[in-house]
Image (tube, rainbow, N blue to C red):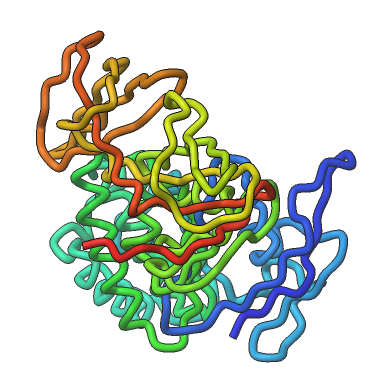
Length: 352
């Protein structure tokens, strides 16, 4: 097990990591999910030894890594850019870390060839990287990382520069490959909530250098502990509706202030979190279309209702003209309720 204890790092007095304590277990993929600047890459660099924390401790199966230089840490890393050696063939690119570690050229090439078959490049061993597509080049980089059989594998948004369909296929292939790598601690950093939820066996939500919540992906998605977690883990963004409770009635401040049925809550201010899929057409709330985006077979529509901005997700291709108006239904029975400090109060209702 890879264990991080109170890892902190600051540059020019600006904190990049603020007391991160996490355990990463082998034979599972852990995804680090957070927006750009959340600290994901910095955390991977600290694990790899490319950045030294100001304080904290890193251990792998009890061995202290805290002050080991990167070349003494058994880590393999795949980054956003598929960094391959242009003068070497695909086969020799993958064999390179083995020959550098003292494995004979024949044995290294045999292991590299077997790994290239596993990543679907068995027919391209003699080519050079310039003759490969972007997806194939990234497969070479992944094969080179996996062939090292390092106990820790770090992946920093390895598919972010590839097109949507290619990303989908490679994510599934990589997840399947890693489940066969017994004993490997695999950590995958992403800014894409859907990718993180699909890929990982465990997930860590990060923001501003902190680990906000961790657990099984679907559990964290269903029950975000705070508003900050709900904002990071939902794509499209979750709708946040300011609410007030007084005299036993709940009012949505930005939507006309009409009292609505709600849970029994003390008087005060709250925020309702309503996922985009729980906003639907065909209701009584008048709304105006601000923007429509079609992605694959889904449509995301940005709307204005009263003084509230809303996002609606439809599982079909729809055409909503800019400025057009129609009625919305908000399924508030599925809303999450957060208190004034941003802590979730209610259990997550069942989603079918």
